[in-house]
Amino acid sequence: MRLPSDIELFELVDKLSLTYFNKPFVDKVYFNSRLRTTGGRYLPSKKVIELNPKYVIESNKEEFYGIIKHELCHYHLHIEGKGYKHGDREFKELLKATGSPRHCSPLPSQQREYLYKYQCNRCGFVYKRIRKVNMRKYRCGKCRGSLKEI
Image 1 (cartoon, helix red, strand yellow):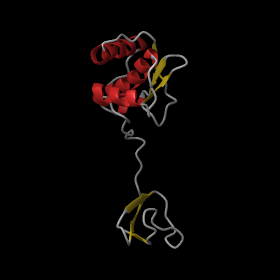
Image 2 (spheres, rainbow, N blue to C red):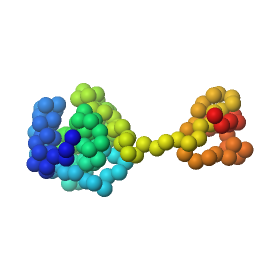
Image 3 (spheres, rainbow, N blue to C red):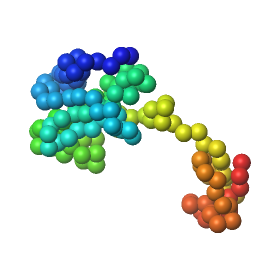
Image 4 (cartoon, rainbow, N blue to C red):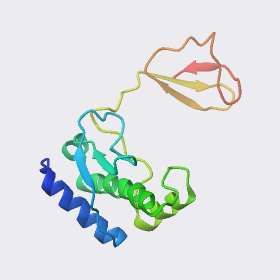
C-alpha cells in the first residue's frame, strides 16, 4: 500500500468516521514519522490525530484502518466531553461497538528475535529473553522457583 497524500488521508479518516461513528471528522490528521512504538495518537489540546506512516507501508489495510478507528474513538469521545482515555468505560464500550482494536500489533521491522528461553523448574512458565540471564541470581517471578535454560 502506498502512502496517501494529506488530502487523501483526511478523506479516508472522514469516510471511516462517517461509516463507523455517523459523525464527520472536521479537524486535522497527518503522518508523524517520529512515532516509533505506536500506530497513532490523538492530541486533545490540538484536536489532531497523528498516524505512523510505517503502518501503511509494512502492515495490511485492515490494521491501518483499525488504528484510525481507535484514534477516532479518542477524538469523538473527547469532542462529546466523555471519557476518552484508555481506562475509561465509555472508551472501552465505543471500541467494542465499532470493532476497533485496543492495541495495534507490532511492526514486522520492530519485532525482536529471542535468543534465550528459560523455564521454571517448579511451575513450568517459559521466559523469552534477548539477553542471557544469570540463573544463580534470578528466579521465577511467579513462584520463586529456579530456572533452567531450554
